[in-house]
Image 1 (cartoon, one colour):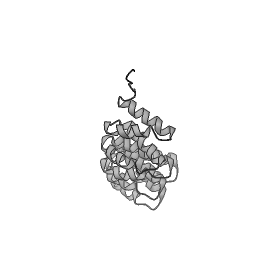
Image 2 (tube, one colour):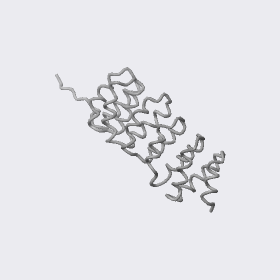
Image 3 (cartoon, rainbow, N blue to C red):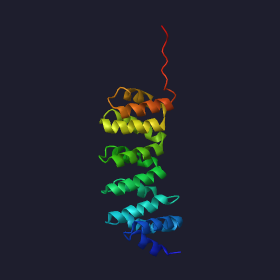
Image 4 (cartoon, helix red, strand yellow):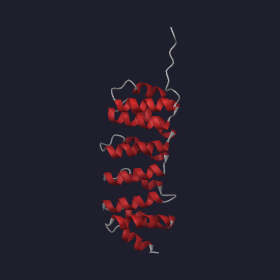
Length: 191
């Protein structure tokens, strides 16, 4: 088996296949690699930070603070990698940053944010509800998708309001959420 130093060299070699194998091997070593990963996360090189986060996210117990900090990285790719890590290792402390990232103009980033919020489940509901009214239609759609997937009864009024929005996607997610909450059928009183 290669040494940590050799695996780190492979991880930052620029060869994606070699780096992927190194990321898996490093993650298998567990917490022993954490100090080495910290150095990678501080690198000015985007690829080095990305591979450091990629490896960190594979650890059974990663340094979640580092994943949260990477949500503010200047690189979209690094933020996306941190978001994938947050999907695997949810942390309530990330919710404010995640809610803020719902406004990211990059569609992939916005989808990953929703997935990370869903992974946080119930603690994400109130911040999402608070943001709904003041948001644009694309952000509202993301919020409704997250609320529909979390399926918390506090979201029922917002999901009902989303049915009146002029967005087929938002309407779809609102219907899905209401159905998950047992509100999918409307009963009418016969006349």
